[in-house]
Length: 117
Image (cartoon, rainbow, N blue to C red; front, side, top):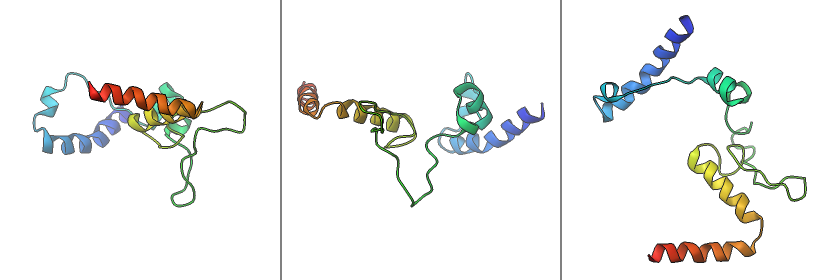
């Protein structure tokens, strides 16, 4: 009970920010769940509920998909370009395009064709 109350108290700030843009957001919300680092650790198997790699600002950057293991590439929130759905999608695209440099040209051709439609 105390933990749930704390989660609600901490989420109040987010609701207040949203209400500045959408005043009736709470009334329009059908379902709401408050996630915390403990939630992320339990349900997403995230180390201590964190995202991304342990990088100190100014000391390093997100790693690229290459690994020391030949033909093994990685993607996700611990790779460039970083944390968040768009960034993770981008890391997947980088890994996919890293498989063969020859594949980039044909993929760009497909994108140009789709753009022209």
